[in-house]
Length: 371
Image (tube, rainbow, N blue to C red; front, side):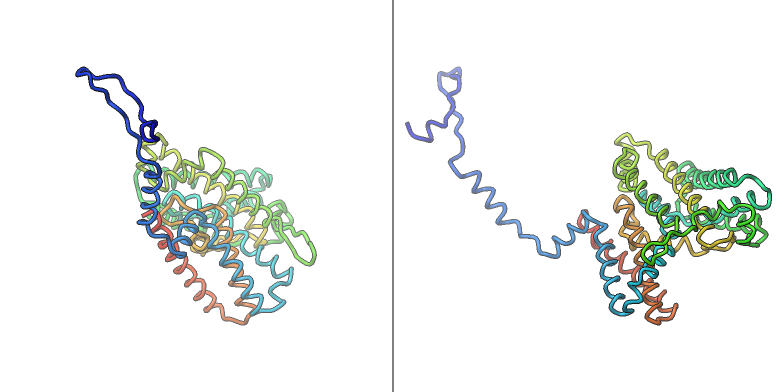
């Protein structure tokens, strides 16, 4: 019996007495078809492979930029840049902007934007300071009320976006103006001095306490920022809520069809962002040493800068929460390196502006993979 006939399967006879056989394809034919298909498909170029790699690992772009920036300014500025005190100073400077960037990232992941994060933070700090210093409430209670204010502001933003179907940009632009006016009204445009805080409510400046290590000075605010990003990473990558956030940002309609309560998810995102801003309010008092209604006025733009440079897509649904932390560090490294190199502040802003444009252009190029 031949090999071809041995591979035939005998079937029952049909009504006309004939028999039917099932014939398998000749040896090697299926493998030949697969090889032929691979031959017709062109091999991806190194640039396309890089594009796919960056699409699957969006945090790698800011990591590479950060490493190159550190090496470049280490060569340009010399040993002063790598001095432990200077490196720890960079961490202190970016800690508050990093917290604001964390709050901003949560909203941007849902394909929104929050222009009120800095205003929420300042309002919470003003309320903490007024209640603890002027009213005389116990400091923990004053801090708790400040946290409640931050959560309430986030809930209002989320409710306006979900219930009234208003664009997040317009909603948060409006609340930014409202909250900034409230800051000036509640504080009478006056700051609460550091001496008054030290006498009546030193707990407000707790995150400004320093810990020395090998010539470096780390504040508790730096450790707070690291813990916050670690907690948010866990929420976004190890919980169902985090998967819902990415799904809503990627395609809200598809998320609804999948059974996700998109409005509830969006409100929870804005509420959590408000809570993070209130946490930043407490840390900012320790960083600045006082309570000022006009502090961190540009915090909104700086947080967006860190988010964009950190690789989170402004179109939502893509990026790692750790990216904005690296983005904030990149901005801090640029500012410190250029300052040590004797570059004027004007040109520091010029360089950071180009960083933002290049980051957005790179994001558009990476997004073409999924197009």
